[in-house]
Image (cartoon, rainbow, N blue to C red; front, side, top):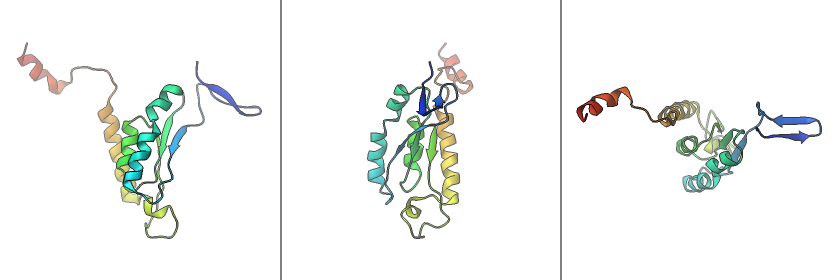
Length: 137
């Protein structure tokens, strides 16, 4: 049975159409990659998905670059959140660890590649494997 609960009096959420996600958020605004690696280990995205199977699990990254966010998708994140800026040198704590438009485009491409690589989880022979299979028959 899908998880459903009362968010506030008279406001039910969840069920077959959840209108929320659970997102692991780390405040690594300095963009330190070592901190980001620790944060993604702590995120335990797969554990959240087991505990809340009907709720999309997400990752909110504040690290520099895109690798950790792409890794979160490989670990099961269905939603990602990243800040975008037009100039990383602007004042404010978010700009340095934000993505510029080109990086955002690369993030989307990389996530789509990982999603294709993850496949469906169903083991089947691919057309490219048939010649090798036929040789050993």
